[in-house]
Each structure stands twice: as C-alpha cells, then as structure tokens.
Amino acid sequence: MNREQIYSALFAQLAAIPELTTVSRRLKHWTDTSQGEQPALFQAQVNESAQTTTGQPTKWVLRCDLYLYVRAPGKVAPATLLNPLVDAVCNKVNAVHPITGKNTLGLSNVEYCRIEGSIETDEGTLGEQAVAIIPVAILAT
Image (cartoon, rainbow, N blue to C red; front, side):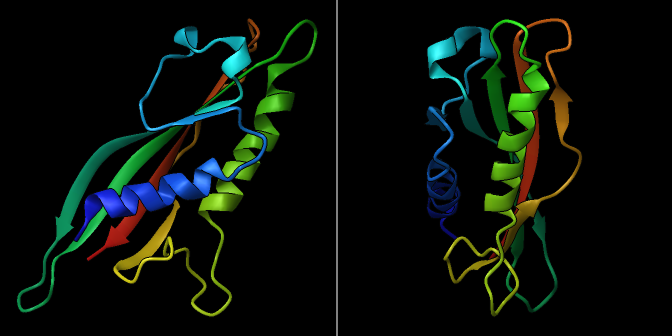
C-alpha cells in the first residue's frame, strides 16, 4: 500500500472544489487563517487501523479529518456560507463511480473513500467564524 498516493489522491479531489480559496494538507487553526484565506479546507491524517484475515491481504482503514473554515462579515449568518461548502465537500468525497458505485480515488487498491461518522460544526452563532470537521474513511489494501 502506498499511503502517500492515497492521501494525495483525496487531496487532489478536494483541491478541485472551486469555492475554496485555500486548500492545504498542513492544518492551521482558524485564528491563524485570515479572512482572505477563507473559505479554507485542511486535510489532516487522524489514524489507521488494520483489518486482517488469515490467508488474505491486510486491509487498512485510513482516517482523516477535513477542517472547513468560513468567515462571514457583518450580519451574514456564518452557517449560510458554511452549509453549501459542507455539501460541496461531501458531494466530492462521496461521489460515486457510475459502474462500481464507489469513490476509489481513481486507485486500484482503494475499495472506497467516503464520509463516515459525525460532522462536527460550529456555525458561528456567537461570531463571524464557522467551522466544520468532516471525517473521512478510506479502505485500502
């Protein structure tokens, strides 16, 4: 398994989302991300776990979190800017191949890539900054 190839393939798909101003694999806190750099998305590797069956190749579940930041000026509710971006990210990650029905990131050793788990959000209720953390799971051999 080539981990870097897998994480790079996911990042390439995310970098193609046109609404994003900044896309990086180096996580920054939202307080260190200027308004001019937002909307911003950061991909951070979280953990990996092995699924082993005797006599079969090991399958790996690679997990990463996608941090999505958007700042809304003035009286604009930050959630109104955050929600369409969460949709764009989810649609990109969960995009399915018309034949296989899965997002394999275009790699033969990836069984699937998908949003898996709870999306954590802070919609900026008490300020201008909104944040979403989107969990991604990738099953690979």
